[in-house]
Length: 368
Image (cartoon, rainbow, N blue to C red; front, side, top):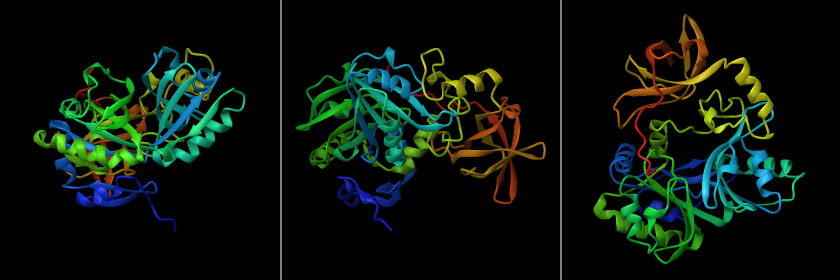
């Protein structure tokens, strides 16, 4: 069996007391001081995550725009230089290859950030679909370290380490060649927590130096290194999807509730026909939010029951650290998606009552 890969920050995690697990073939910390403490730090001050396992693919050349526009569901023609868009890559049947961020450097140069578990699959998918286009694809995942500084104090902390005015970087924009603690970085105002913050891309050799500098600069604000556990509870509260949970090759973006990132009015893209048909015919199932009435944690994969039959399954469920409620997301038949509908979640061998609630579990705090 292959050993999990280590990021350039592996020793830092060990030194901070990180509890290391195998995540998508990478040795990464699931927690340090505890998931709840790290979650709260991100909601109230700041947390620093190692996300070097994420994948990055550069697309350049004469047909770079046309290729990326065909590859993804969103409309990248609206992007300015150094602007970013969230989108999906879909299969012809409408199921999801991956969700990703598209960074436009210029009209002939794009940077795609993809999920760690899908890097090889995604890159092969891109290569297969690039054959008719004059483009060069380069998988640079192994060359890039990435960390995410998230929380309401993120800008104040990072500003101490750079001469670049971070307040000028707008939400979903990036700036390249930023000097952070003596290292050359690309910084984007993006993240996966529902809070303001930045994702920082840099060379492996500078990762430890920059990580240590951020932790030191953030001490007075209550910064904490944060692991995969808090990353999941934070993204879940902000209703951000996780590949393999809310989205996968058998779930379409429309079923997952992300139709706003599918532009059926643009020229052809992979999956357009299937998604247009699904929209026209009406969805047979959708992702809903729910709150447990009976006390119990609704885990991923648990069956959802109504009217004495199984109508779907839980995609994610937690005791929400911020709301202190047992809540979840589930993919269920459309007939059972009205707010207030009573459901039952099969927790092991027991059926436990739950109600459909809004998926907007909490207000996002992005800087617009």
